[in-house]
Image 1 (spheres, rainbow, N blue to C red):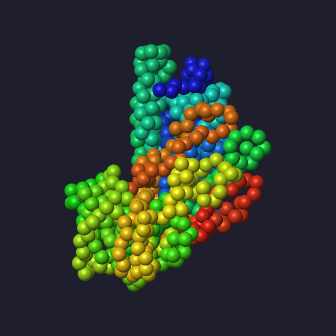
Image 2 (tube, rainbow, N blue to C red):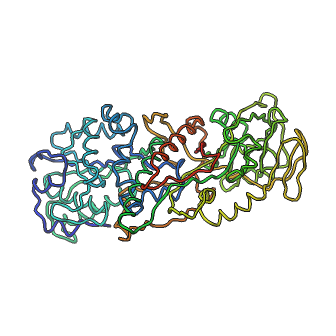
Image 3 (cartoon, rainbow, N blue to C red):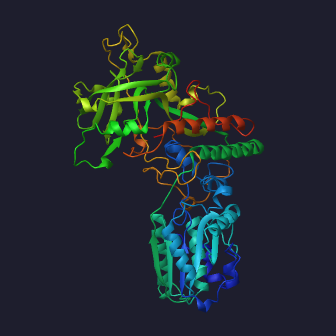
Length: 578
C-alpha cells in the first residue's frame, strides 16, 4: 500500500492555510472546530461519467495504448484536457446546459446534501493534473451548481514540495493533511468507483487508525470513523467522429514534438479491415435474431449475438471481387430460406439473393448469416453446416444489405515504406498471409456460368451448383451501441466489457525519458472483441456519415502534424463498428 509522500504527517504543519494550498477553489475554509464530517468525492466515473476510448472504434491494443501515460509525448487520454472538453458537443455548447445527461445524479444529490450540512466539508478530489484540468473541472462543477469547499487536483508537487509516485500516493497524502488539519472531525466518507482504489483507501484508513490507537506509530489526532463507498461507474464514449478527431490532434502534437526533439517515434492512425460483407442494418438484425432457436436455460453471457452480415471475404476485398458484387455501398436483397444449429455452438440462417439471378460472392459454401455463437465457437465453422431446416412461410422474410467493411482503427508507428494495402493489417505476418489470399480467391459466386476448379472458386448460373468455400468470416461484434446522435449530444454507448478502463489513477511513473512509447502486440483475435448485445443502436447511415466526416477532417489535417491512417481505395467510405 502506498503511504503519504515523504513522511508528510511527521514533518508538515497542518493549518488551514497549508490545506487551502491544495485547492483551486479559492474559498475561505471554515474553522477547524466547526467541522465534524469530511465528505470526499472522486470526479471521473464517480461524479461525472467521463468518456472512455470507444471499443467499437479502436482495436483492443489501441485502447490500452491511448490510456497509457507514455503513449504520447504530450500526454495520453487522461492527460489532455481536449478529450474531456470534447464531451457531448464541446464546452461552448455543454456549459450553458451544465453537461446535462453526463452526471451521476445520485452523487450530485449527495454533494448537495454535503453542501447543506453545516458541520460537513465537501471535497472534490481527482487525480487529473492541476495544470491541465483545473480551469475545466471548475467550470464543469460550477455549471452544475456544485459548491465544494476544496477542489483538489494532482499538482506537480504538494504545498510542502511533496512528490507523488502515483495518484493513490497523492490522494493519501492529501487525505492525511485533511484529517490532521480538521482534527475534530469524527467521520470521513470517500466516494470512489474503482474497486482497486476502494481497497487501497480502506487499507490506508485501517493503517491510519492503527497509528491513532498507538499501534505502530504515535497518535496525532485520535481515530476517525472512515467509510469508503464504491460507486458503480457510468463510463460513456464521445461521438465517434469527435473522438477520432481529438485522437488525431494528440498524434499531430506528438509528431510535432518528435520532429522538434529529434527523438521518439512518429505515430499514425491506421485502418484494420476484419472482413468485407453484405452488412445488415439494426432493424433487420433484430428480426434475424428471432430465428435463433437458443436453449432456454442458456444465459446471454454465454452467447455472442451477430446477425449483422452475409460474409463476402474475411479480409479487405480484392478489387476484382468488389467489382463483381457492385462495389462498396451497393445494395443486395436477400430472402431467408433455412436455419441450422452446429454442435449447439453456432446458430445460422442460409439466404438467397432476390432475384435469384442477382450477382453475389461469398467465401462460405453458400450465403450464410451467423446469428449467434456460443463462447469459444468460431464463425468460420458455420461453413461446415450440411443440414438446413426450411423456415416456415411466416419467417421467410426479405431484408436488404449494403456492401461494406467491418473496420476498427488502430494507432501504430508511422512507416513510410508501408503501402496502402499493407497498412490494413496489424502485423507483417498477416500482410504476407493475406497477400497470398488476394492472389487466389476462395468462395462461391453467383454470376451466370462456371464451376469451381482446383482453387475452390465457384461461379453459379443463377441457381447453379455450389463449390466448397475455403473461407470463414471473422464476424466480430462489439458490446452496446452509440446512444448519442450525429450531433453528439447526450451520452454515447457505455463501454464494452472486457476492456476495463485505465484511468490516470492506474498510471505510475513514466517508464523512460526516451520519448519512445511502449510497444503492444497489435494482432487482434476474434476473442478480443466483446459480445454484441441483443439491443444495440448503430444505424448504418449514421456510421457511414461519421466516417466520411472523419475522412474530411483527415484531409484538412494533412501536413507536418502527421497523417491519419489511410484507407483502402474504393472502401474508404465505410466504417462499421458493432
